[in-house]
Image (tube, rainbow, N blue to C red; front, side):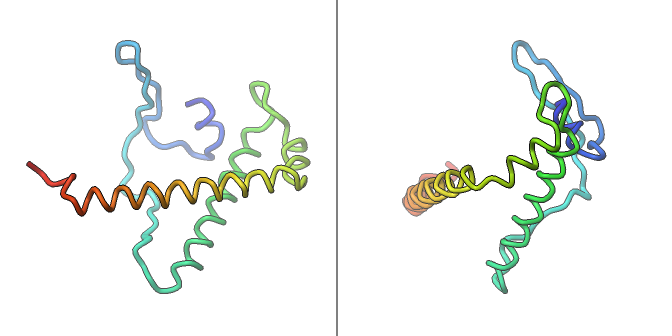
Length: 122
């Protein structure tokens, strides 16, 4: 939760930790004005998704820079130096391809189970 508060320029309302028994949870107010992305659009869907992902990446990077140098984390200059290296990028792309294959496999399993009625209310 502390990391979330450091990374966001303005944290959502009522953001705090809650203990229930031995389990901890993050409690926050739901915001009806939170941004949503409608991925059901078919017109220029690939371009739209690419743009959304680019903006999300930029927001995550900005949050990383905002919270850098705190509680033992790397300073902004170290993060920028790391991002400019190429070695990690190939490893990340390889992992992304593996994840893509797994998601496609999982989707096919889900679709088959759905078609077989596994999710019908009883």
